[in-house]
Length: 606
Image (cartoon, rainbow, N blue to C red; front, side, top):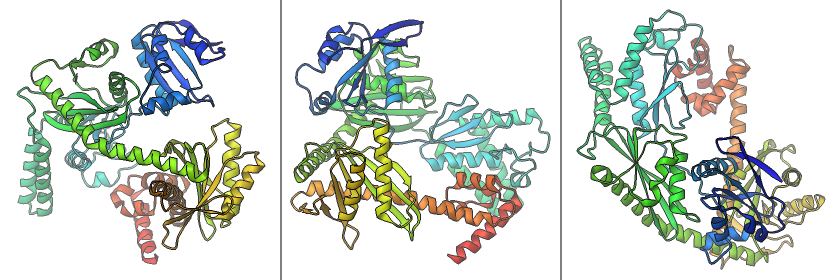
C-alpha cells in the first residue's frame, strides 16, 4: 500500500498498488478527480494526465481505436498509479508538478522556439542592470520587456548605464574600478553615496524602461549638444546613435484604439492531430509575436493549452491581463488558476485573440506537411533498420564515439535516440583513461555505461552502434558479455571524405544501405550527432587546459580568479574577445592589463 499526501488540507488517500493486472486496477478506480501516471515494463513513468473522473478517463485508453501516437503509448503501458485530489483544480496543479518532476516521454514538454530578452533591474542597495533571457523568479529584481531582439535590450542597457552612474560590477570590489574613473559609477564600494541620489536615478531608469522616454530624450539631446560644443565629436556621435536607437525602441505599433499596456494574448489551433499554441505580447503598445509550440496531440487540446499557460507563467513575469479565447471549455479555468485571465468576448480584445488564433493556424498549416514527411521518413527508416538487422524493435538506440589528440584529453560520448529522435537529456560524457587506445577506451565506456544501467535498473537499449569497424564491434560485444548482456552491436564506418559509408554487423558483414535511403540518412544523422557531441566536449576540455596554462603564468591570477574567468568567458576566444573594461570587473585593472598582454603574445605564437 502506498500513501500519498495531496491537496491543501492534511488529508490522506490510499493508492492500490497490489493489483494483479491493469484490468483489475481499472475496476477499482474511483469516479473522483485526480492524476494518473502511466508506467512501462521497467516502472518508468511515460505519461501523466489529470481527470475530473479518474475511472472514466483512464478506462478510455484501453477501449476503442486511437491514433498512431496514442496507440504507441497504450502498447507500452504495463502499469499505472493514481492520485486522488479534492478538486479538478488540485489535479491540474499536481499534474503540472508531476510532469516537471518526471519529464514523461509522451507528455508535451513546453519549449519556447523564441526566447526574447528582458532587462533586469536588481533591488539591491546599489542596483544593477542586466540583460537576461532565463527569467528566474527573483524577488529582489524587476523585469522589463520583452524586447524585440537581444541587440535592442543590450543597447538600452548600455544607454542607461552610460547616462546613469549606477553600479556595474557583479561583485562589489574593495576599491573603485575603471567605471568610476570613466564617470560611469559613483564608487559605492569605496565612497558614501546618498540614498536619495540612487533612488532618483532608479526612478528615472524605471520610467524609461516603462516607456516614458521623454526625460531620457531631453537628457540625451543636452549631452549631445554639450559634447558637440566641447568639440568632442566622437561622444556627440555616440549620443546621436543612442537617440536613433531610442526612436526605434519607442516606435509603437498600433494594435487597437485602446491604450493597451503590458498584456498578453494566447490562443491555439488544432488540425490533423497536431496543436499549435501562439502568443502575442504587448508592452507599452508595442506588439511582439511568438510561436510557442507545435506538437502531436494525445490528450485534449484544452488541457494542453491550460497547462501551457500555467507552466509559462511559472518562469515569466505576469502582465496586467492575459486574454484567452471565448470557448466553453476554457471558462472554468479562470477560477482554477491564480492568473489575471480574461475571456476575450468582444471588441478589440476579441479581435486581438482572433489574430493570435489565425497566426496559430497559419503556423500549424505551414509546418504540418514538413512534420508529416519527417515522421513518415522516421518510421520508414526504423522499419528498414529492423529489417536489415532482423530485429523486432529498435525504439531505443545508443551510439558511442571516442575522441583524443595524440592521446591527450581522451573523451567518450554516448548519445541516445528514442523512436528515431535524439533524447538529449539521456546523453552522457565520459573521461576515459586509456589515452590514445581507442579499443580500451571503448571497452571502458561500454562497461561503465551498462554496469551503471544494470545497477540502477535503467532500461537497456534495443541496439548499440559504435563508431568504427569490426574491432570496435568485437570489443563492445565482449564487454557486454562480461556483464551477461545480449544486446545487438553494429558499427558505422566513414569513408576517406569523412562521410558515413558502411554499416557492419557482428559477423563483419557489410549491410547494404543502397536501397534504404531513409535508413542511411537517419544513421548518418546519428553518427554526426555523436561525433559532434564528443568533439564539442573534447574541445572544451582542451580549451580549459589552454586557459589554465596561460593563466598560471600571470602574476595576480590564482585558482579562484582562474575559475571565475573560465566560468564567465568559457574559453580562450571568449577571454580574447573581452574588453579591458569587462576583464576589470573580475580581476584588478593592472592584472587585467597583464592578461591582455599575455593574450596578445599567445595569439602571435599560434
